[in-house]
Length: 363
Image (tube, rainbow, N blue to C red; front, top):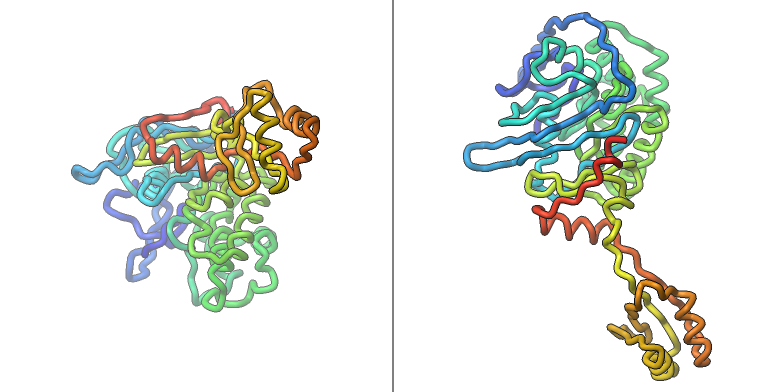
């Protein structure tokens, strides 16, 4: 599988690629550097670094991305999540100019696709699509040096050492990546995308194929990136990790945005007013009678746990007092909370019911 990066000479350009690239490396390894303008572009610090409006991509009769619209806030880590085939990778490739959209608009760092300065914008975006952009014959440090030459024509040794520390590879910096674990290769790939201090990082499934330890390493790295003030858009189908690593979420299904906002925004309104009341086995009948006497009935019994769906004004404290007055002392009273996985499955199974919290995404 081909790997692609932005601001970078390792990637291979397809026929649909935007011409505003710094360099491309064909399958034979030939390097062709292309001239980009030197006009300085100043970002509006309050503007979204990435905006997509009514974006679509079709291959013949097959629609991969369908009327996609979202924006991401500056200096946040935003997760682009969805099942396989939802359009995540295609969307990221369109953002980078690697795939030409069928319709819609893309704005990165205040510029839209096709503007004369688009090549300069791409110089300020780091990306890792599908696989880490690594030369196995070079050491980790040499890979970063080479990226510095590709981006700016110079090597910043201090920056290279800082990046090696950031991704926890300082002690293996002089080893060739061919001996690295998959997680170490992913971290080196992320370090490569960070050379030159890009304003926006786009990462496609950085935890794909990693064992639990490797996934935790990537999650920690995402946290460190947000602390540096870098804006990150990362795709994944590992919901638990995305929930922990990202400030905002964009949920895709069938090529469309079906939800966007914080995890709390997406879960809002999805939790039912339920209580799980667990009592001793010999107190089940007594507990049921006390609840029935108060006008409450269990909706389900699971072992010695009664599932109660009371009116909104009744809380766990009230249930505890009610049972105690009947000399039933519950071992636990829990109110289940909807999980991101539950919300995700509900959303992707009903893709036409879009749930958006635009304020949370753009603020």
